[in-house]
Length: 272
Ligand code: SF4
Image (cartoon, rainbow, N blue to C red):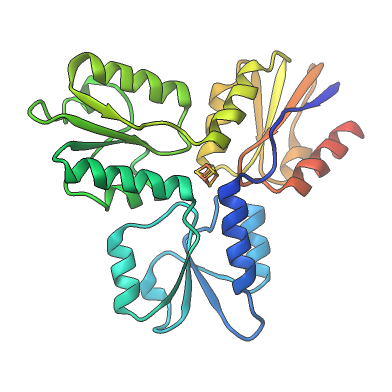
């Protein structure tokens, strides 16, 4: 079996930035809290937890006056207000690309447009964007059932979760333009797009995507592949996979998958 590492791999700029902030906060004598997973990768979260970071699902779990890190996925204004009310020391690791989507949503709403967010409503990033404006509509697909919620009386201002399937976002915006007045800045971030493009161009017979099951950009890489696909979050996962019959295996990774894990997997596969 030949192994082909697809480019790019390693942390994206947003994850690098979030980890840098996390590292500067870690202190043996002070507990630092992080609201939700800093990035959606089990290896990264386990490493930070081992170094003393405490992950919480709500600010109510953070003691008054303590330091709390907001994850790369961003938070809503209501969460910021709650942190202020509880006198928490906030360090914000929101990815700048996500922050830009928040700003676009606010700008659309301030001009009276109906804000439409293309994304998965349960994802932390979408929850943060949705909290920025009154009565936003989340579109998970272009199905008639989803489109029925759209306003016919106001133009639509469309934004997107940064880690969607780039083709799906483009198709959906095109569909909206057929029936509605639309202003759109909906697009995935560059890190997401480049990896999806590399995966779509890969013409081997199987692809191994390295990343966690709850990582949106990792899951999208599995979706856009044009061949048989495997996913693994840890080296143990990789060892359980059966590559029987695979002649040319591509290896790619989500934007929050550590580079040392990526290289360990390549070594493991080449040793097989
Ligand atoms: S995947 Fe994109 S949006 Fe998400 S952290 Fe990386 S650069 Fe930012």
